[in-house]
Image (cartoon, rainbow, N blue to C red; front, side):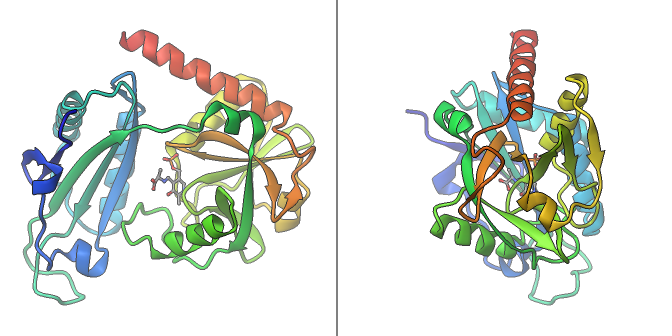
Length: 287
Ligand code: PDD
């Protein structure tokens, strides 16, 4: 059994030895951003896109990127080489570092950089085949949901309500329109057309969201990115959630009522198959 190795501020070390000072602004204010990058067959998936989103998040919180993309790539590959799993989930976090507690930014601070790797756990085949239940809630999070911020209290409270209801996710509505879920993007199928909200400050620009749109287009599925009223979600033929860890997963019940036929639908099956094929192609290319 390998001791889990993590990266903290320039060094690799066993997880048990990784420490940050209590005045780190990530701890005190949630002042930081993060990424979750899936690794298939020891190959980080869509790494340039994840690093571009990291840059977007850092720019949004006015924090200089502590590393170049080449340095991030080297470190991520180094971290994953220190773990045995073929499929991993790399978590990285950058905070504004340690400073006397004051809401305004310190004049000078050194960002804290932390990275860890866990086994990538994608949905079991029976969940893919059966689909999952979800609940709904009002999206009461802030208005910068495009920033992958470590300040996730809203998301955690919402996700906990799903967990307590025995649901996989909570589908969110803001001002009567679909936004996303607590840790996933959401897609709707109506009359054979794939719908999702366009990217905006109200949703996280999911890397999986982009992949799903590309694959759906390649499969000839018509796509419409537009505001989706709640009633169109509640009367959808199909509903999906997507994320780096869930990939694409069918939602078959919403607030206890069946979605469409109550089973994963035909458009889901087409795009899910395309996603798995796409992964296999990457694995073959990496081998
Ligand atoms: N969450 N929306 C939210 C609010 C998310 O937290 C996530 C991902 C997504 C999907 O993004 P992507 O396809 O790039 O994973 C959408 C990650 C997995 C997490 O916080 O663990």
